[in-house]
Image (cartoon, rainbow, N blue to C red; front, top):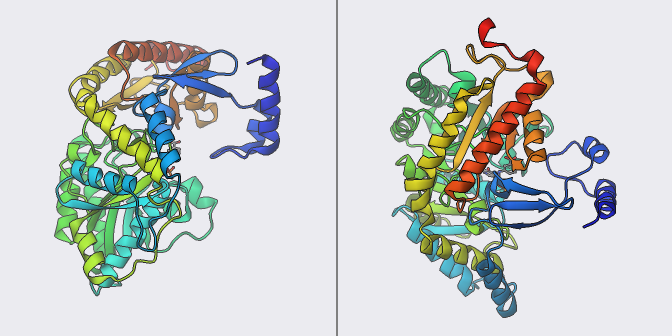
Length: 462
Ligand code: PXG
């Protein structure tokens, strides 16, 4: 593609296209990078640059780019039945087969699936199901959902209300009522006065304290990602989940595990919940379900909720035109079939995850890195101005965004969340490509440090 075409596309983009999560004016002045094609773990832009995609698109292209089998599955299904709905007593083979397959992969107490078009719609569905469940059970007052600060559960109004992103809340006006947020188990960011284990227990205690303050009879559910993704790839202390499980059981509160990022192999199990031994009542999923090739989400519904909705609930007035879309479902099925045939989940758990953990941890020796962490194929590192004290760079320097831009210029996509640099590469990445990722990341850290030099505390001053 010629330079002129890039400029023309950028002009049209800024004239007509409102991007998600974007300062429209600033982007219009700067111009977008135009991604034209991709294969494996690499994306290409209109200027001929080849970039290692350390974020799997947006935490979703688990099987990598250019999988002909997925193209073929979509093509065949489009020819046969491009659309039909699942309302009004109809269904079609792809939706049925995918529902069966998902229940086979899920923990044994999950045997039902409600399809949606995205992760946000899945979480809207969760909120409605949870409240409907307790109403059917004769406890309509048990309606409050407890979530966490800095959680991401989507961009619809229910999704962002469940989420704990303060800037999103500020732009939205009155949120969906009956949603409460407690502290997140983000040890490096908020817990360093304690040991990680102690901090994990304190965060679980915060849930119990809130339940008691609200009255357990008013609390319907707790929603959380096994590992927070968009919040900064936050792997909770080992003490966190066992303590949370005990609290929820003690007060009969439903557990919703948001598996939109953690599902489909990211943590080395089919679902992140399995890594932590959780038994969620509901699991919203999306992203890796189709490796992002087509938009599809779902809620996996545990027997307790499903049986109540089915046996005692009557009609559930909820659903989307594209719930269980046949082409998306066919692609998701093929995606799962390929993941199974290639043993991807086991490979992440037994080989690639431990290998990434080893290589990623080497970045800990870098002067502007305060912590590295990873689990399976999700990871983060924390940028700091003072390695000894862990003091952050001044906010005005936007160190994270600077590092992200340097990564991009040097052939690597890393996402910045504040000053945490995050990776979540395709699960088909090889050991050699992990080496390349770590080399590129180190190079970007060097350049970031160079540009921020006068703001960085030298070892001697530390
Ligand atoms: N739950 C979780 C845990 C997510 O990560 C959603 C729900 C919503 O899914 P949809 O399909 O409606 O986007 C998500 C989405 C980022 C970023 O910048 C993360 C997401 C979406 C967009 C950007 O990290 N996660």
